[in-house]
Image 1 (tube, one colour):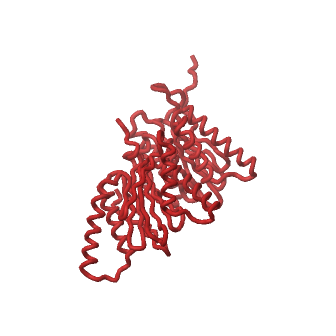
Image 2: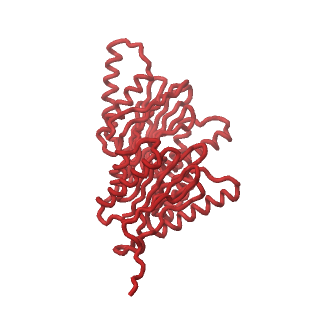
Image 3: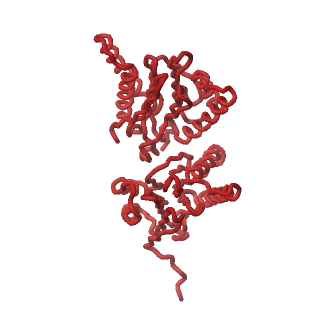
Length: 204
Length: 217
């Protein structure tokens, strides 16, 4: 039931992910951040097996940092995406990771880009992408309303439309989402969309 | 629910031989079973100006295999200081696929190129490297079964037209028409492939790359 989706706008890329950490019928927490900052100008939104998700994305993040330390310059988004695909492909026939990834980044030359990376290491550069059951709703909504070079406000409106669609049409829909954006000024959290706040212990 | 791994992403690739030219075409859909992810997926790659390879099957293996083959060809170019002949390349692909005999790459390659004296060469192979040479056309992918009957049919029509009247026409253009019609009509019968077509028509002097607009469904 994990929903991850993203799109590319005018000089920026946006990714949104649900924030529930679920184990069978139990919701452990509903503010789990599934979008990791890979470096100053890259985001990696991941969905899948919880252990694999955290371990693999941290592995990619540390290797991206290592490249920067060794070489003095950061990796481009395309290079980071291809590195990620390579790691998934190598592990595929030995010890596969069950993680689906949307990698968003901004490079000075290439502009904003979004990469769709399957759990079986299928890599494709896309304008809009989504994973999970929520993709049945978010992809269709994005197909209908997406235009190339949208502004941030228009893109957020579209993201909200997708979230509304997921909330109303998906059985056991995740209640909370986080939206992160990456543009020339860097990668950062843009907003949270919470319909259920974390419950603190009640005062007895 | 058993998933057919060769039909997981959906694909259609066809190559045809003409007079002093060859054409290789593929569909553009990238799907995950019933869902379409992208409509601009590249299945055909250029190895060098006179050699193309189209890979159908599981997209991740298409990408891995392509990277390995480009690597091997670049090494060959460095050592031999020349491009690989298509017959040699086909043997290389076959060997690489058979290496993984008991855990294969889930792809079916289609190879098209110019051999000695610019003679067109095409071949296909299964996922473990069994080569299938042909004089006229080769097909591969989820739409492969429907690609078979259409080509001889349309070719027959063209042959009749050619025999009946003298036409000053470009052999490469005719081949483009034939292969495009064959591709589009067969992917229209296959729900897992389609969303347009990508056609390369190659003569010894030029490569013409064209995108086909077909039924987008």
